[in-house]
Length: 148
Length: 148
DNA sequence: GTATATTTGCAACTCGCTTGCAAAAAACTT
DNA sequence: AAGTTTTTTGCAAGCGAGTTGCAAATATAC
Image (tube, each protein chain N blue to C red):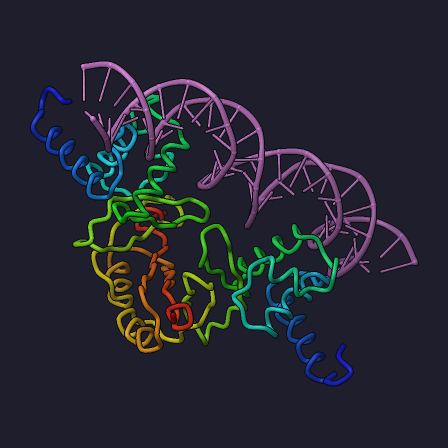
């Protein structure tokens, strides 16, 4: 716990435990570390990013993957695939549903707190982005699969 | 060439050659086979789908990947990632820009020839889809990377 | 505090995709 | 149309993000 700001650290710790309990996940060191990291810093982070930020050798990469998948499963965490084959993770705040833009060259990521394609693209152009493309996919359960 | 419908086959063949030439790609059997397949059948197809449809042992999987990447590079073909880690490919008709919905259970894919999120989701609900999610990402070149 | 259930670390493995290289096929030249 | 150059292909090995089986360690239940 930080000596400079013990209250904030404590609050995060308590919130993390509360979140894990609500998700029916037992309270373990790796889960607490990973979730509090995602709660404190705004991603989206790759697994590599996350491991780098975790205390040295504090847990195995397999554990990080397993925890993240459980978090996604229970909607604590959201995933994005901004680069092929590399999953990114961020704390899932349903109040602030958003999308991202990644620079094709420097890979800098920005969040977009709006959800209308044309409007977003206009805004991006004003911010100096060029050669803008978007990827939009839908996922759902179809009528056949819904039937009893 | 089909005995039943030689004209149509010939037209596809000519169109494929024209497209390859325009893309500055030399005319080879694998490239012709793959591109004409994508021209005839509407995807999006996985590489496995494509190999299954290609004449038996007509070319190596590495060649399929290489050709598809070249096609994407020259905008002849468009990619989508409807399932994690599996790329899908379809002929890129810029006149008919569209998105897809995949059933989370049976993986059936439908095309959506419209591009406004809310409108699309309303339409999907009417078609019986449940538990609809979408994934929307933007890609572009940021102001810093544009500067000389 | 002990028993039971869950999670972790480790190492081996999976799988979509890529790559190095020699042989084969296109494209270019005259 | 044959010879030369360039590009492409097939093969097999390799890559890397992510997963998994299993025994040991840790959390939870009693």
